[in-house]
Length: 406
Image (cartoon, helix red, strand yellow):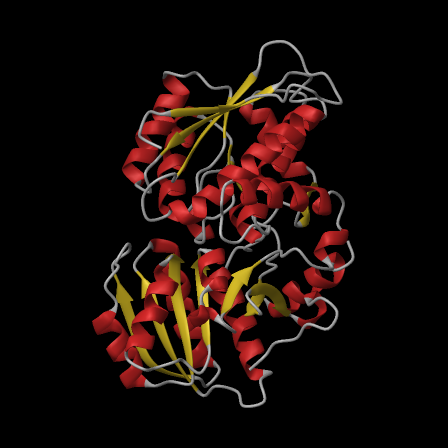
């Protein structure tokens, strides 16, 4: 697995309320002139609830991409209109809203929501109606059994094996490699899945798992959990977190006068963790950050600039593009190339085109010819340095002068 991932790197390093609708239509002035009846693309995001801190990033990225697409030629020469609903961070709400989008709102196409549980709920609806669904943040690829579901982020088919080994490789590179680890995770499906993989792979490589502990998704009281982490006192803390959970965990540990010797955080809200004093030198997962070699990819600098302007206007604490925003950018790039490449709005034709062709995205070229429609994995590690996220591992993806700090 690591050999395949290394090969991928070498090839690419150069290279509000339920029912409330937000519609993002064509900008007033465009370079191209898509015309005629809009192509309506429906989807949900967690605009409220415990996933909202991250989902707002996806919303801003979608706004940018709808305008980007309409500034070219839209879909088949027609303007794109995004019909966005709030799934409230609840899978059952997402399921109902995708049913509504398809049967009541009669959208032409759909886009996936944020996070594994809402994606799985939406995917079941997509399969029932034969709709292509593109998603950027489902961390359990083996559950993507629907043939017309496509990943927009290069997790690879087995991230529970590939990603822990990237982390363990980085740990082994430190001057004093950690010999013990605490694995603490939300019971949110993708986090739990990755945590179990981390435990298994760490034990295979001789790193002792001093404590494996799970908490309920959306939990906010981490006092008792922090006490157990402190008692274990391992060399490294791995956290299967979502949103603000990492901030809350580190704050609870600080109240006990305990600072982890090192820590990794799976899917945190990037701004709050980077800007918190507790987050200094924290590790996290990523696939792209606003540095080289990523900024040299076609169109990335332009999109990053647009994202920074929108995120600043929206008062996001960390207005810099990262893997969360890039995932939604990739979703739209895949859909645009699928529609225009197939020269059709028919879902089966779009799916057939995507399966046969390489698609160029903000992450680089993506293929969908592997297990569960995935291509090769391309996970990276970033670290908070001076209140900014920096890619630090693998080394060939670190910007000049940037390295993993112990």
